[in-house]
Amino acid sequence: MKRGRVLVKAINTKNLSSRTSLPQSQEAVSMERYSYNPRLKWNQQVEDYFNKAYGLEAFSRISKALTRPSCYSCIRVNTLRTTTEAVIEKILEIQREKRLNDNSKNTNKNEDAKVDTSENVNGFVSETSPVSKCHIPGLDYVVFIKGSGPHDIQYDIQHDRPPKEIIVSRKCAEAVLRGAQVYIPGILACSAHVEKGDVVAVSVGVEQPIRDGEWAIKITRGIVLQGQKSDPQYLERDGLYIGQGITNLSRAGIFRDLSGLGVDMTDRVFQLTSFNDVLKGDIFLQNLPSIITAHVLDPQPEEIILDMCAAPGGKTTAIASLMKDKGQVIAVDRSHNKVLEIHNLAAELGLKSIKGYKLDALKSVNTSKTNGTLTHFLSEVKISQTNQEAESASFVSEVKISQTNQEAVSVVALPGSDEISIPDDEKVEKGQYKSQHELRKHNRRMKNGCGRNQATGGRVDKCEGFSPNSFDRVLLDAPCSALGLRPRLFAAENH
Image (cartoon, rainbow, N blue to C red; front, side, top):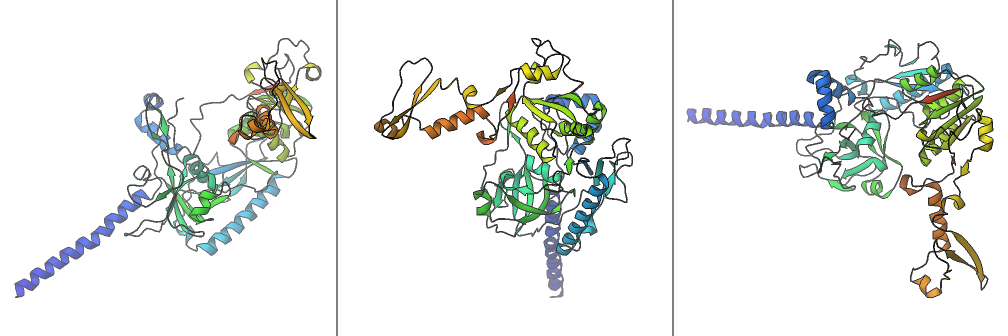
């Protein structure tokens, strides 16, 4: 009997040990899954080249560094509106208010915080001050805001159920890592029964190989996440969790609305200040190399400067600011909508000296113009407004309006046709003729060109190029591979 009791006790002890070790094993797996440890995927030829150039170990460190954002944000102060000191004081006040709000939500938030100071730029990002002025001579209008990370996020993980979560697109995740919030267009999938105010983990859907060297996310927007291996990219999302936040809408609202805030990020792997709608018009978030590019150009007031490949306008507006908005900055880009972005940014910063044109930089020189001054050029060059008559000529050669029974009826003559077709009521009802509204809509598209969602609107000027010696200075910052852009979660495009 005694031996039996000892045996039963030993068996129970063994079973208890196995039961207690199981949650520990699950916890280790959960910690590995719900973490941020991405592996950057490269185009194979590019990866082979860099492995050979840098060595496997060095290139591995480079790839890992590229998946993390910089430890600081760099902003350029619009000195035509305010001063650097005033901006620093306002940012400090905003950060104080944010800390108070964060502390009220989570008093233990700072216990696991660790500051990454490995990327201080020659001491410009101070260890003691979170906001500091750039110490490079001549760049006192540049301000650095220190961030922190990576942080360990405590997700709501239970051994019998996974946390509620959403999957965001890779580009959305890269923006969130830089301090942005999660907006509705960037959300791809969501757990079931998510309501407004729920805490959700945020993971990233990264492009996966499909065929013939092509890549795609392969996640149908709106799919329901079950927290099981049948979920899209379940295994691929291991180590791709960037934080957690509070939903601003229910699951139904997230996939019903087209825009707006989807998730308010409360815990982030990397803490960087968000500048969305902050000090609008007074500051501009810009990488330091871009700021230095305009600084090295050394533009002077009253000069005429050409900025080629100018979109989205960061360096263009930096040039205009250095000129005290006196003179003329001609910004060209071959994309209609990108020229509109330049116009909008210039208006936001209150700059009047910038003029944007739709022009391929490769066609900037017009040798048929012999006069060397831009004034003469602007008076003679054919600058055509992209209006309805100019852009829709290939589609509609003539539009005549005839009055019938006191109603206007469009009569359209197509190219190569001598006959004018007058729509009758029966054919109109069958949809064989376009209405005036449809024709106007088509003409607007012909005028504006294809853009985001096929309609951005607005007018831009076009030109045929510039005569030699028209400008005092020219900035050509040609588009590059952007291989050094960070944070970067995918780099397998063909370069």
